[in-house]
Image 1 (cartoon, rainbow, N blue to C red):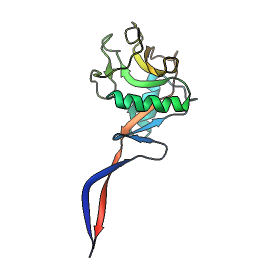
Image 2: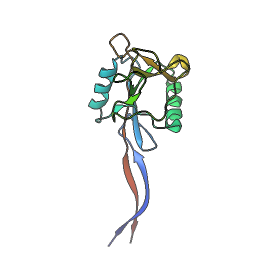
Image 3: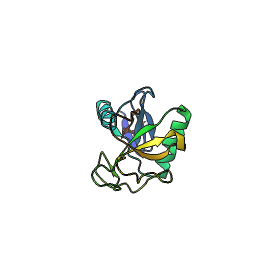
Length: 155
């Protein structure tokens, strides 16, 4: 007879093509995929019911920026907008005000530019831009990872 012992330890796993980090999985869409903000959010929802990335803290932001630098590509959408109230940046997935931001100087306050991006020109610091069809970037999607519990078979 065998027993399964749950050790309390676990690790995160993601679907193929997704990159795990700190309880989330990230999908960096192909850099040739050029979408509007709304199109990018729809793309994420079609892939594992994800959403455009929601950056919670400096550690997560640094991880993402490192990934973007490795890819040496373009600008990417962030799931952050101030469409409702100018200058009040809210996460699209939760409708909560951002407590962490990484704006490049003089960014995040431009009237009429209501969506946020990781801007390659600024070494992926954040910038605000128009959400409309004029500006097209690839999506960066995020979804919770699957937690696998470490098990030890005894007996």
